[in-house]
Image (tube, rainbow, N blue to C red; front, top):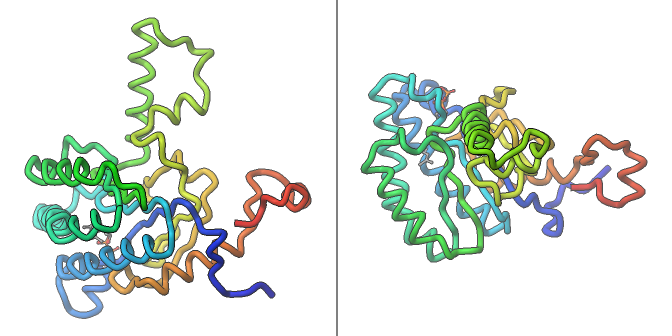
Length: 252
Ligand code: FPP
């Protein structure tokens, strides 16, 4: 029986979260979906603080997917306003805590005013190195891979790239934020077991933790629980258990 205690020497470097369940959280309380998203913002604030306190190096939050553009316009607008509100209310604290903000996705599709505000926050926090907070916004994993392929085709067409030179490293270098490590731990709230077009390339070997909690209820203790769960896993990366034990590298 392994200990159910957080080991600070084996933290996931990169935690990525699919924040699902705002709508169901609201509906079960007789509230509107947008009220559910508002409540979700509080969970975002707490999880950013908690990840930083725990020593996570990169936190990626799936704030708005490519597919979310198909939601009713009122809900799309409300989600964009929330992002705006998050930047307004949190950027001072985020900056004070040495957190660097980044964004991944087809950002040219995000309304100009919000994008400009985000750009200012990204620029302001560029030199911070305590933690990187990545908002996946207008984001789709397939679209990210398509965008990477386009860059490669353009290089090939200009004669600078030969097909034989294409390998995993080169493809990865064309993704949106290639310097970030792949997520070690992918958390999904809302009790659904799918990856919903999130970081498809990068989660090839991520450990997945699904919780029945709806996102607005997610708090520091739940992040700690997810990390403890991750720390019980044996990461084999395609090898056998015996190989991993011999190399001493298997445990999270
Ligand atoms: C999924 O819940 C959640 C979203 C589509 C958006 C996530 C947004 C937030 C947590 C709010 C604020 C975020 C930031 C980064 C400022 P859902 O609506 O699909 O829930 P359901 O499956 O219960 O309907």
